[in-house]
Length: 319
Ligand SMILES: [Zn+2]
Image (cartoon, rainbow, N blue to C red; front, side, top):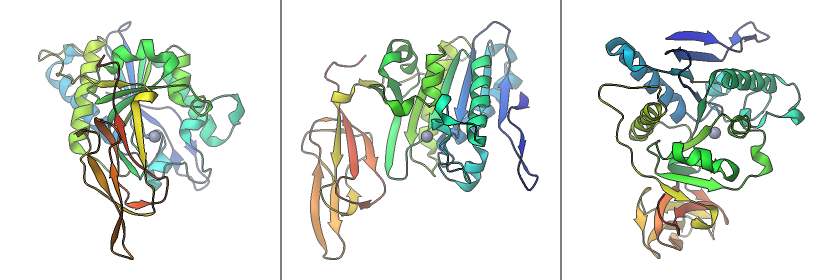
């Protein structure tokens, strides 16, 4: 394993901020895959996944070094200040590290760090995986989110990741400054993973995604282990018209009754919104359609319009 610092900079009090990359190098000319985590400093599932992946590759290098055919680069914590503060945005600048790319974003410190990171990824990767978790409110099944214009290249890769769901959605201006969009535009296939919830680590979820990433590395010709690639599940493939969002109609506390990952029938109970001041159940949220419950509200406090759940119901069948 080689350790490299790609963006060292000194802070006013002297402590350096650095973005560190760990590399496991195979034969030159073979495929190179990069993993990126912690763009949002409160999303810890991906950071933990990088730990698990580094641990796995170190073990593999010790017991079966010839299994590493290609190269794996891992950037486990690309926004170290935000990670230290456990906040989504970079402290001091209040900047979103995944919204800094492109001409309109100036030369602030986070924008410079993002440009350096993008250059590093572009120069050293044939494929990138960008790991994210959800916000404070919603817990997500493991899913790959794909912008429509890149779907032909990315769906065959996403099918190898052991995700529960692949969600193909239209492009929108907000994505143009992201790493996923810019790398895909630069013809480096980049999968954006969304899994779990921020500020938490779910070991079982990490096992699932880790197996998917090891499978993907076999599929891309980076790994060829004697035990072979782990089995992966077949994800559900959905487009926006096949995703049903359920929103709260009342303010109150949401108490979930359904389980994330459950296959629901139309009319099944998702949970209750209660009014704790009056001791009343003010709303019973139900599934509008049958399908896979892939997003469920974790933060109990709701207001009218707050997202409670998302259900995937593919009309075109599985890929
Ligand atoms: Zn994120």
